[in-house]
Image 1 (cartoon, helix red, strand yellow):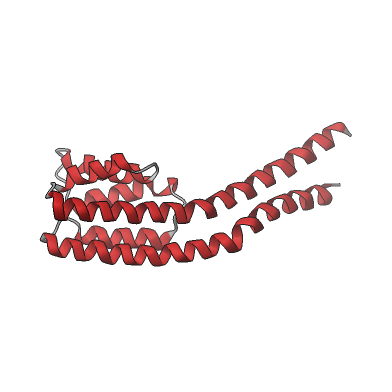
Image 2: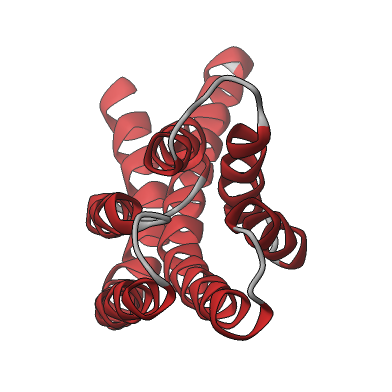
Length: 173
């Protein structure tokens, strides 16, 4: 009997923790999109006013933002300076692919960053600024959608985790 109670408690606990994890993902997504917008705006400043080479600008921005976005920027900067001969686009795309799973962002944000990567480092400053502003505008739209999802699903995820655990326990007995 005590073994069944321990098992039931573990099932409820694990399902509840999963619900809280999902709720945290809904809460982290708008925050990370906002951080990404700020990082791209800093990149715009570095390109326009700082005249910094792209690897230096990406590295500097990566040092200023928190993880997991930090990893994307610093990895892209590192790959640009390595002697492997990768293009800016390839460095950016590989950094995104390597570190995307550690973010709470969705496919839409990833697609925006991939599109942005196609223009990164391939044109003059004015054109770069236009592409950055386009990506920022698209990400701000996604941030609004992320806030809506957070408001709609964060509390529900916590509740469903607990309720799913309780349902499993009821079905077990």
